[in-house]
Image (cartoon, rainbow, N blue to C red; front, side, top):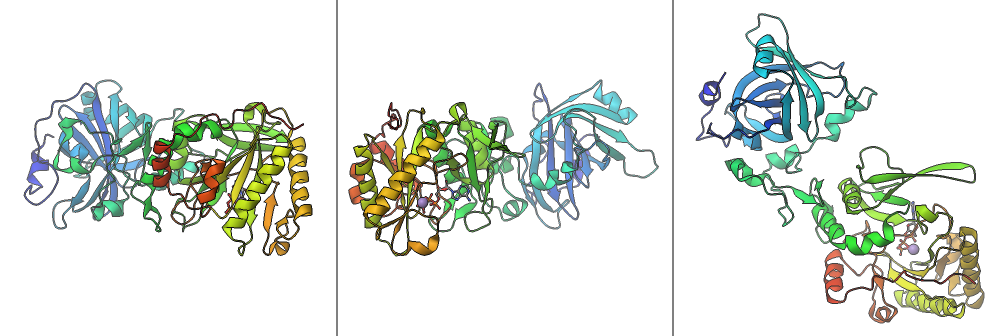
Length: 498
Ligand code: ATP
Ligand code: MN
């Protein structure tokens, strides 16, 4: 076809699309899809061959199900440089509307593609981010002026036909390079640029290439980095991901290899949030599964081992991370005992601090050192590091007895029963955190509360100046750990319950 038709249809003084230019073809043949909100929404499927992009308009978009044959109307060849275009073609110009880069990568023809094109049967492998494996384009017979083809997924291990394929396009509705939604592109919202962004190859610097930088952290693409997750403090998803990436060396030692509950808030903290503890679909390759049975009940939990796993769960809209007190390697014996101090609404924070100090003294009398941290919420957590030799029932009984001892000594200040009605003016010493399936928010974890405060481990001496459980923002924490490097061996201990 060549590029004459492409050139003839466009006024390059009016559209931001690139005019044809010479681009040296790389060793790999490029493949991409542009989602195009023109007169009718469609997906432009493009394969590089002999210096141009062969193009088809796929009205309904690709399907992973081999029995869904999708109409693909052949359109004019496009210049290679068109492949990085994302933006809005002005109304009234040819193809006016918003263009999103929906997938990109390379393709490998099976056999001679020129032959296949001629014969009307093109078989190939896609190496895209979203489309992979075997695919075919098959020309239909007919005397229509338009060349009608069918885009079909080949039956391979990447084909999906269990019904879940129906949601594929909805689940993948954002730009593959900028993470922007169609509306963001139309509104010309620029993606967040960061030091960690992946630079685009110099050869691709078309007018539109200005807006094609991703937030890539630890090799994981973070979509919608500029999406606001907390109106208070104007906190974005990108900021959250960058915080978690930066804090990972301190966070992960306390989190990895432990069954985990996530609090996911895909619409931000003011939207709907839900707890998730099973790996489910689509969390990522580094989110692992832990099976275990307890009291005749079977459980499936997710856990992570590394920073990639951490980025994958943040990418999926998680904000809070809640690990167990034991690791999957030693699931029956916790290596921490937790007291969660929950003040009733009318209790001043100073009283919570006193309760924590009281608890610390009592633990000392049992020969146990303890640690304190803010929760990012209303209270404090006092944690006793353990060597992982005492069982869950032993740890829970110990915690329960100590909580009841406190209530016995100061019944006006403390309460240790779940019943909310009896808590007026008191602090609930929650020892129920010490059991199978119970969790406590992760050290250095962010809370889905206004301003996205952090649960920050403190030294006991820091308690004096502490004003509230939610006083530390992500920025403050990052600044603080730069100034005073936290001890990495806080949990290293030989202590066990006597
Ligand atoms: P605050 O200081 O505001 O009380 P917190 O983290 O202690 O903050 P709590 O409501 O007291 O919050 O809950 C204690 C812990 O119990 C949490 O840190 C969390 O790990 C766990 N938790 C609470 N609710 C759930 C839930 N629905 N699913 C899983 N874990 C939960
Ligand atoms: Mn609490």
